Amino acid sequence: MDQTSDTSRRDFLKKCVMGTAVLRTAKLPLLGMAGQESTPGKSKVVIANDAQLRGAKTTVDSSRIASLLDRAMQSLFDLDDPIEPWKKLVRAGQRVGVKVNALGGRGLSSNVQLVEAICERLQEAGIRGNDTVIWDRDTEELERAGFHVATAGNRVQCFGSDRLGYEERLATYGSVGSRLSKILTQRSDVLINVPVLKDHDGAGVTIALKNMYGVIHNPNKYHPNGCNPYIADVNMLPEIRSKMRLTICDATTASYEGGPGYKPQYSWKNDGLIISQDPVALDYIGWQIIERKRAEKGLKTLEGVGRSPAYIATAADAGHRLGMNDPRRIATVEV
Image 1 (cartoon, rainbow, N blue to C red):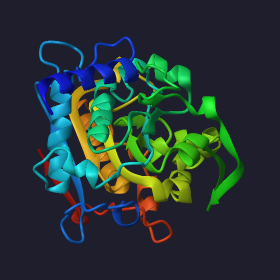
Image 2 (cartoon, rainbow, N blue to C red):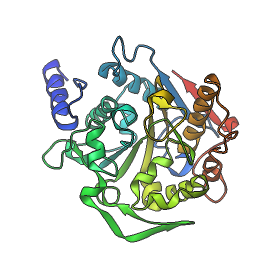
Image 3 (cartoon, one colour):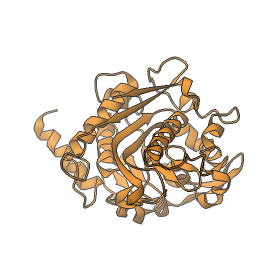
Image 4 (cartoon, helix red, strand yellow):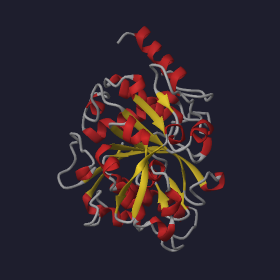
């Protein structure tokens, strides 16, 4: 692609996808391993960090986060070309739902620049702009997080489940019975999960698996008992399990206490991404990162304060098998 067309594409994305923020110019077993060359018998989790991700600014540099995403994806799939990993996840003609987390506003939501880079790579892999939808529960929350709402035209779409509604039929598994977002059921063939690395006052942590609470109409019903076994059961719903392909956890800014809302005093600039096709292994690794930060700050462990994320073990148990929570069976790669 020549420089002129590349610039035009990036300008197009800027106009279509993002709001007022300064923007870039621009499972295992059952969740779709899609050609990932993982260590046999192990789930691969890639942790990618860039100490210069923000440069001298407080916001993430758009070019550097795109490069960080490429580096992580190439490592996860053991491929040299930055587009090839995406071609293993999607194919032309499919509709892709990019499920972000916008609950924490601009301080602690899925990073706008990161999502833009994901959408750009999807287009380069053959997905048409209007076949991608960036979404979460609520349209106003998306706007507060910096996303620009788009519901028509040939550009990337962006809106909340409140715009399209929820299915009338209950989807059920185990302890849960919920109506699913029509964005998932009617607008998405493939699901890319883009959660944030956060502490959670009930579940202990909220990362990949908990982000699926934003897919159902009644998440408040499933917070007792540390959200266990509800988080695992929600992720067992066939429409979620069959469409999930990849989790890209935004760990550029993370929280170790006081979550899930944004509390600056309990947040830190981690400047990284955590990527895996195994959401259980990703949650386990993310939990350990949060525990290390808590120890650094002199706080008790989550178990010590009665908030150990028991849902992770439930998600890995024989009744769910959503992934691996045994560190001996998780291959962690740092790039």
